[in-house]
Image (cartoon, rainbow, N blue to C red; front, side, top):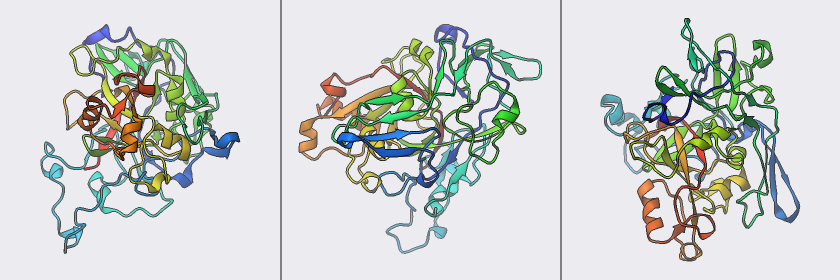
Length: 397
């Protein structure tokens, strides 16, 4: 589980929810051919995306959606087999591929992520976790029990791009699951705040028994690929992004805004609005920043190596290639609760050809300082308000 940076109980009152003890395992990467998303054209060139489930996952087609690092042997005269292992495998303090989520295990070694060719249409990478119940009161058997709070998984997720020319903000945004006013994935137990999202309804195991996939999304989180009550495991979709120029995989489970949750395919949890944003790394902060473009490059979709942003995601259905601040092994200020810093490229930047893929926090902050990106609609750059709960699972190089 992830622990939230906090000074004890000042972040949230006792976090509450109600669910039989179900573990959270993570995560599974699926290609676009496995998507449960629907797609249809509407009037005025608007693109509708309706349906439940995670949709396309991390290893999308083309350089604009695939963040798997290249082989280190590119441009040399020798085969990759002659290269030594990444430095992080011999010294974890050094840079290189590393599995960050320790409650599960990838089904392929993380150190091989850059050395395996993935045929189109094939899934790659799963993590399944053991018995790690999500609750608010620790019981004698080691599991936790929520006191109150529920998640309704019954809504059908629907997102409609504003238009082809300006897809963000969407004209329709309905999240696929909604928590009540008491629900939060952040759970205070014995003085520690855990990131413990609810991924299935409080029903008998038989109703959520989908160990081989194709779950009932009226009963489980939209990012669930498979769920196995007998073994207390669940498989979730991984999402691609960047942190300080390094590709990362993460999971997305909740946000404090319904539009964000509709786009992300996660649970809308209004209680998360109690978290203070715009404070980044100060001592009382529970958040780290995530940087999200509204109007990054969209032409060519996944075939465009500069593709990034909510506009691209709304038009082609793949992930927006968001950029994180600090993550484990690159910073000490990591939190799985992310403060959405939403930015917009200015017309001047676009006209001068400056718009492109941004993968590093201080590059983004420099562009904001120099006036080439702003907040949405020209607003001052900074926190947009929503928070998103995203546990980082792996760093790829």
